Each structure stands twice: as structure tokens, then as C-alpha cells.
Image 1 (spheres, helix red, strand yellow):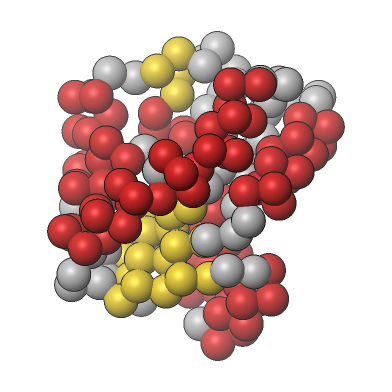
Image 2: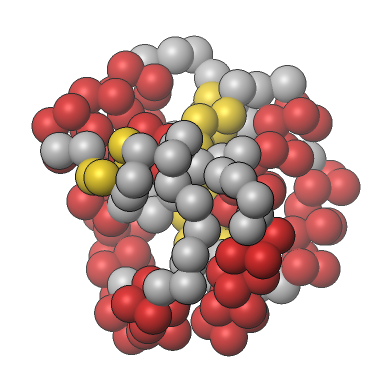
Length: 167
């Protein structure tokens, strides 16, 4: 594993896994939230965001976490391993809500500066609707762009821990 893409629902633990796997394998980690968001939750435009992704992926080795379905066509073909955290939406929602409490005094380490966690009902709806609205597009993207990569689908914290132990 030298070029690892971690995908899944918001709150699934992508950034946590990226950090832990990066430490274990000695690989640099890029959190796409850091590339995409500007302070105050301002979105970067697609061309600028995609250029940042391509620049990062030109490196020999990396771990990248994040959804951003509009860039799957760029990220999946560059990966040798794609890890899909496929946890239940209710668990992802609980973790997203917990982040608001956990980082109430500052920005979380895997987020762009100036983007503090807040109660966001639209975001929570996205998490709960993920299986219905995002999963079909993700499965198509994996079939179309992920063919060269080893795809690892992890469905629980126990599976994530076992994967890390053997990595």
C-alpha cells in the first residue's frame, strides 16, 4: 500500500483511519477537507480543488481521505488501495454530532482552518441519506475507475481495527 484512498460516509472515521494508517506505514496523509474548504466553510472552486488533488497525487506515496464524489474519477485511478468505510448511517450521524462537542473550542485537526464544527441539519440529512443518494454513485465510480486498485470494504469498527492490525 503506497497510494491509499479512504472513502465513506461523513462521520465514518475516514480521517482517523488515515492518520492511524499513515503513522503505521510512514506515509504522508492529506485530508481533502483541508484542500477543499477555505476559512468560514467557503468552498474552493472545482478547477482549483482538482489541481490541488492532482498535485498531491503526483507524489510517489500518500494516503488521502474524503468523499468529494466529483473528484472520484481523478482519485480512484491513482490509488493502489481503496478503503471503503461502509458503516451504518446512524453511527456516522452520532459521530458527526459528537464532533461538534469534541471540537467546540477549535477546529478539528483534519479540517481547514476557520471551519468550526456546528449543528448542521442539512449535513446530518446528507449523512442519513448517504446509502440512498451517494452509495449508488460510489458503486458505479468504483466499477468504472477503481478497477486497478485493491478494494477493501470495512463495515464495522472491529473490521477497521483488524485491518489496521494486519496493515
